[in-house]
Length: 358
Image (tube, rainbow, N blue to C red):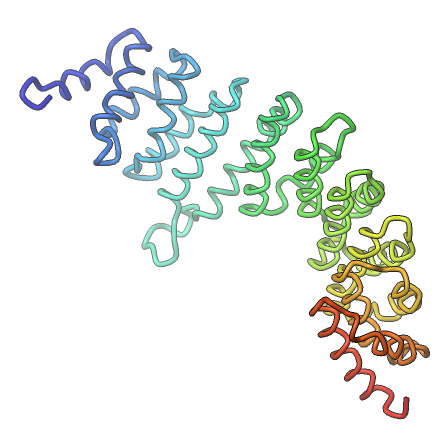
């Protein structure tokens, strides 16, 4: 290759009028120079390929887009120029190209955004500002693809959306209805949507989201029911539902403790309430009433341990708490789960300090 200057020939062929030839040149150069991270890039090569990107096939577009994250723009203007050249790709129906463009946008934002300690102008956008602008720009194309793709594609896009929500919280909140579970959705898609819904909750949409999650609790899919309960608890734990949301969700979870016909939901609700009481001690009065009754019916070790923990936390306001735990202590030798024993020890000690005579 070196003697025949094949590399130089291949670089010259990047200007070939046939886009399929250019695509093959990119693939070959990346293969030849794999040890050094792929083909070498400069401003002229990068801008030439991006200016012709509309000529490439879907496969060729992806080959070009894969180069962009490896190229570091010289300055802000060059980075914005590359973004402008890539913007039309977001309007294509090729999901792979859209996702690759998003990756390219985020890499450019990371490269040209201002970081703490930079001596650039105060008006220069920071990395976080640029990433926020990127996510705002790509929200509409992503939502459109979510509604029109196959189940496999939808699942992959949901994973991308999940990461983007973590990167820039709040941007997808107004699109929460897109993530409602549909009857014909595949199981793995339903699970992903329910997890995402919890991250989209804000004071305006939390009542709708909690109501939707409440409808999924009794789903025939056991895992779906568990995830729905966990998502409701997550909204309360993060205080994302606004004023009164924590108490409202706690009341819903308390009602679930009495779903004796769906033991996994009762157990999951107890676990969620235990976490909520740790985070929001003010809801003790809401939680305490059904606990002695719930201990009789909840059979899963995690749920039983959570109810015992709650009896210790709420024991001051539950008259029969010491006597309920006394029955559990009498059967201590038959308890196999270590978490239940640990919770029982902690609850007993707390009750002793709350009510020593009993």
